[in-house]
Image (cartoon, helix red, strand yellow):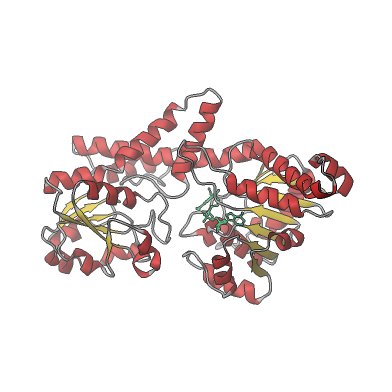
Length: 462
Ligand code: NAD
């Protein structure tokens, strides 16, 4: 099928590339010329395992193209994905201005062929109808020069025969394993009131639904959840709110464990084996972050507020998380007492391993608060240390390897559970430090190994 994906970030580029890999002809559109130039030259602007290889093969086969020309993308696609960012506003609402700009632009370029517009971006509940309205506005604006009194979108639809439907198709991929998640989804959610649009979406995803590109091709088909648009939009928010709440829950249990002398890792195992609870998202640590959980939970709280409902549980999940983000500082103060003049090294900067994404990462909070308390902050991150991204960071000296990081530190904090941090030369690192203290912010390291390397080991809730 002919597909256009607008917005080539973590979601759009992965979606476009994977759809091209399974045989669709995809044009990816981005208004960032630099990014488009990079992608045309065969490079991925983001770090995502396996993505560059797929981009190369799909581009070589002619199934994947990049452009900054929205008109060309709209003319090409029978299915048009909107995958631009919806960052948070200071009020907690989603900033939908990028979606609006794209919808208006689509309206300005729609021709007579039937198109399906797919909201892949996480958008506030009710956005399906809103996007339709904006597209019609874009259509009407296009007619203005010929008709200075203006026409409505509906009149243009009647006159030009333009036909389109809107589908909500929320994305659940995880950064760091986004390609894997796209080929092996737990479910695909489609929300629309148009059977024609639904049929096209089912056809589009059928190779994935039938597990043709899955790790395990013998599994039963991927469940496709078909709903109305608002329910599909709500599914995305509810899923992220649940996962974030689950982490806040175990962090609260960890804080109680710390006080009563229990070990939260053993508690998590003990409760996670209960199939009603499940073991995932029960790792206590320094809190959730990233580009999705914080903004999506806040947006849902805000939507509830708009409808006169106070989302107590979600607000508490956010509050617990805000406090948890400071837990590493509390622990540093317990061990080192005064932080002014001390040097703290952060192992990891990204909000999770296997990504280069720093948006709303707990490391940023730590850097800011350690600086405020007068500590010098250094960091090492397997990706950030190797890329130019370090230039965007302030208040932290980014080192090129873990040993340089350890040199002269009064304590280290493990912030991101990168796999390579399991087997660093901790003995050597301990010797380079003023005080070999390790605050394991993800309960990720082996306490015994660290202690025998000479570290004072402090976990979260253990
Ligand atoms: P991103 O910020 O990485 O990428 C957005 C892209 O859109 C950028 O490349 C930007 O240049 C481009 N863009 C902005 N305005 C444009 C325009 N007018 N025309 C063309 N391109 C334009 O965003 P992301 O992380 O990929 O997230 C996209 C959406 O998907 C968000 O709504 C997010 O909440 C949702 N989502 C993200 C994830 C994730 O893990 N990142 C997971 C699920 C859902």
